Image 1 (cartoon, helix red, strand yellow):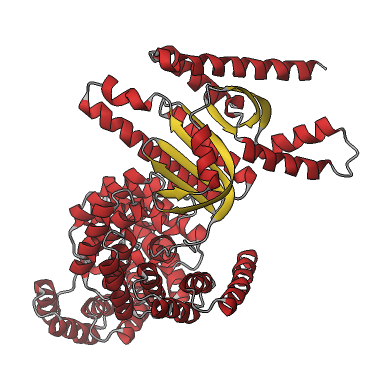
Image 2: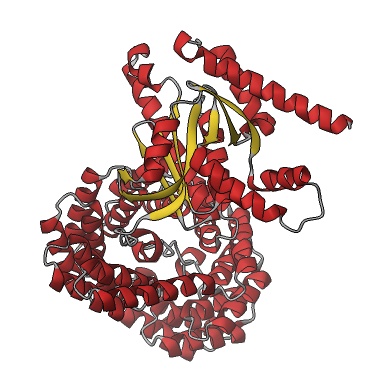
Length: 614
């Protein structure tokens, strides 16, 4: 975090100088505002976006980003105003509708939020976060099935979307579909074994199915993750009581009370369990504590009256039964017990189902606010500036003929879904290893950008593996240089080179174009300076470290010396390739690529055998 902050501060200083030299350039104010926002200096960012707007009143993205900052400061009305202007200037920007929807939801204007999220989906149906937020609103409106549908859409776009599984589980639970809820909480736990709230909510659903031991196990897991989780102790105590382990129930209610001395229901339930163990005075003390916290707690008066009755203190019992009946005049049981007590008849037992305070239910649903902080209100990242990075273009082999070859209309769309799944999984993987990456998909061409050579190589290797999992083969090229991108638009020297080379390869995989090769070899030369090891050994070790190996690439213009991603080092990838070769019809136009790849794999394995035999 500190390292990132230093980057933003350095950029701000650079932009300070640019603004001093050219005070009428709105782009510099815009970019400085973005860097301030990354440092959470929202007022300074607002000031810069305002300067950009004064210089260019039609600057749609300046309104968009200023609105985002207003939202972060809790000024939702101003945020909505800015996003509305941004939409008028650029009605095709899904982010503006998305952000305005978030601010409407913060003001409780649910229908307006739904309308905006729907507009964002119509413009960009592949953003899982928009479905997530709309689902959250539907849940708030008790439209549980609509919420489930939206969370399902989010999960289809991003199968690793932990919070979408969690919230879908919450909505299933609200519909009484407890097994479906359990399945979703389990999926969330599998994605994040430290997800405290998922264990808690799964426990709630197990107890709804009367599987009390499994509920106890889940509350225990939640407590192990958070020893101060009072609600988990309370709920576990309730389940222990259902299994008639009253002392363990008492211990858990005591733990809940120690953590929250104002936990009314914990005193009440502990009192119930003391009553079951015939410790009536302790039960009375607990009911009294509950009444002190809530003087209109009818059940506590009733149970305290019952406890007094067990101690033969009929006067106080009648007083408490009378108070309970006055507080809950519709409760016939209270009336009958009061009448019997006045006539000298004692109650036989506490009715457990009526007198235990119910455990806390899944009130732990993740709100869109939690997720929005990182994923949702994303502002354009200094979009007017070019990047100097490694840039990869890679497309699916044989894609141009898929539509004609596949006669089944459903199969055609399954192929589209495959690419969406690959992109979603690649994005999820990429965000785990770096925040400064560029991943996109235009038709069947995947685009990967990173200023770190090892990150770019790792993402390329992952892309190839994900394609193989879907029985698809991919080939492409990595260039190095400046480029500029805005959503689906890419322009620059790296774009031109990657685009011109990525279809020239005559084998499966991704290779380096001349610009990337020259950049890599500069790095290798740095490694060779003042080193005592042999040059070949240093070079080989460096290439292995960053995920490359050197070879001659077969292209449509002949053989070219280059570097490639050794995706076939992993047996799973290699086996998948050969299985595809066996199953698929190898059309003439792509046959060379198959056979050249087969030769590359065999040559690579032969070189390994030679090295091992030395």
